[in-house]
Length: 279
Image (cartoon, rainbow, N blue to C red; front, top):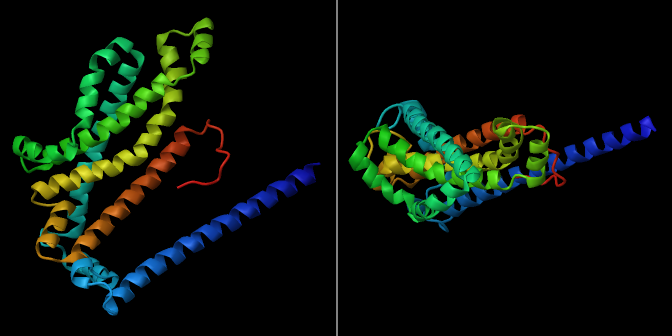
């Protein structure tokens, strides 16, 4: 019996490895086809490299920035500035979003009182606040952090609010019958239940924090990746625009890896999903 179970587990492991190898191979093939097609399209005149750039030009632009720096200074300084603004906005937005989401999720009176105002604030295209923040807070990092905060806040808030509202009522009732007080209910039942919703919101909210930092730099700044994109666009340097976008994509993917590792650590108690398909 033990040998049979071991054989089944070994077969499942081999199947997962083959599936992972196949997916990675197809991902690499898709990347080669896309980049190769883009490069060949510009070489044979099907795509105008003046407007759409070309992969080899983007690579040359990245090498130039790494070796000689950008017009605003060393490349790593621009990345660090944007990353610092996005990270600060992300952390502040997450803390505020979780705090208000849990508070209103647990207090029906406050939820009914403030609901219309929150929905009205959420309906405003928040990117349009960038000029206001630039005027009120200046061209320093404060205005970029503020824009990142308002972009992150509502995503985390609505997930935390819904996560608290979706807590199993029977589980709460059983915990109360067993003598749990309000703090124990929150710590042992409500927060773990809402954590799945909150962690799910973090996957998208850091990308929005990056968007806030870059848009803020685009409106007015003295350094950062947003300013690099603005300068490249103003000088019709399509390769520079794509190169800066590529740097942002790498930063976003690295943050996704960190958040996924955090999710696996905090949600170890959660049963494994039935489907193996993930993004």
